Amino acid sequence: MQRYSAFALARQALNHHEGWERAWRAPDLKDRYEVIVVGAGGHGLATAYYLAKNHGITNVAVIEKGWLGGGNTGRNTTIIRSNYLQEESAAIYELSRGLYEDLSQRLNFNIMFSPRGVLMLCQTEHELRAMKRTAHANRLAGVETEMVDPARVKQLCPIMNVDGPRYPVLGGLWQPRGGTARHDAVAWGYARAASDLGVDIVQNCEVQGIDVSNGKVMGVRTSKGAVRCEKLAVVVAGHSTVLADMAGFRLPIESVALQALVSEPIKPVMDIVVMANTVHGYMSQSDKGELVIGGGADGYNNYTQRGSFQHVEETVRALVETFPIISRLKMLRQWGGIVDMTGDRSPIISKTPVEGIFVNCGWGTGGFKAIPGSGWATASLIAKGEDKVAAPFSLERFREGRMIDESVAAAVAH
Amino acid sequence: MLLIPCPCCGVEAAETEFHPGGEAHVKRAEADASDDAFMDYLFHRKNPKGVHFERWRHQYGCGKWFNLARDTVTLEVFGAYPADAPEPPAAIREAIAARAAERGSI
Image (cartoon, rainbow over the protein chains, first blue to last red):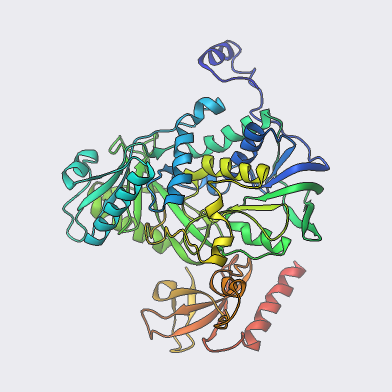
């Protein structure tokens, strides 16, 4: 792999930048792999990378129906945080946030991780109490967060109206090491590093069937031919049910549309991420100057990757009260992704009723922040058959009623 | 935006007047059923990429629950029917089959 550095950049500049290699190979699909990962989004690519890096399993293919990182990895609002209520969640999200810290160096790819701080507003008495509880839970779980008062909120984000008539800001849960990263770069960085370790990434290759014999996975049928494999990891977010149907098992997943939008670019006005859960809106400013805005998910099953107008209106209307400065901004673009929701709003990283098939899904509205930790834990589960971080997130929890309830802790798109 | 007909009061209105209630025709597990049966009843969902039979409530209208047949890919609404119907009525099933045949012939 051609390493990226200031020196390499200078050397290439002398050649008019004509000497750069492809970032990752574009191989043909082989007949057989040890592990096939379906889905070249962040989670799938991270799984493949850690299989190769941590466990030495390099006979791996990542196959993707569309293009690399074209699903939810390219459709989120790039927020990274780990201030979750439950211990199990804190473990995986904090592992993930920690891995993000030096991911650029490890992948030799600038993912532009920016730990600018994430502030979750408390705009009702109930929310204030719930966030205080989360702050205590975070302290016990070793996640660095603190409660801040309205004066500090105003100091952290001066454009905010903390005395709003309907929803005054009563405080906030502040995670100083949360932030954002460049979402496409995370997918590209993992793809490049995984490809370098020998992983085959095959795009425009749709899985059309899964061959199962005697309760064990044999391989997959794709638009580029049949491939045999020993293990299959299904990491396809919104389409998890479609793949599970092919393999003949059921999932506790419902696919719904979640959307986001960006404003026209303006001068820097906010240097942190603000999430307002009561009014269902969150906002940060990208390096280009656009305000990146997210809101709540649609309520009904949907595979269209489109948003709905009334949710844009709801989100923006709510944010205008808290951020009066944005009232005359034009919105530039809006897009939607299909997210896979579980009943307890916690993910699934699990073996399945079919031997050799693993699923990584159910991240719902908050998968981006979890990419490194999710890949790390899924790779370990596939390689060793068990993983301590992934264990609580098994499908068994739905049979046992052992929920990891984050839906009450953050009943908003996150 | 979806246009949804309410079979209870006869109004056809935008989706903002209604509230979605998830998959229809889910059968409650018996009290002495196994854990697997309860997992099926409580959590497992069909979540089809295609026609979905689902519950809706006319929240800002007559307030009543009903069922709806809707495609999750095209967002086409095939029709609404009473909440207590054990299965979708013949007219709706025919409309769905006709649309499937039409698509197959393209």
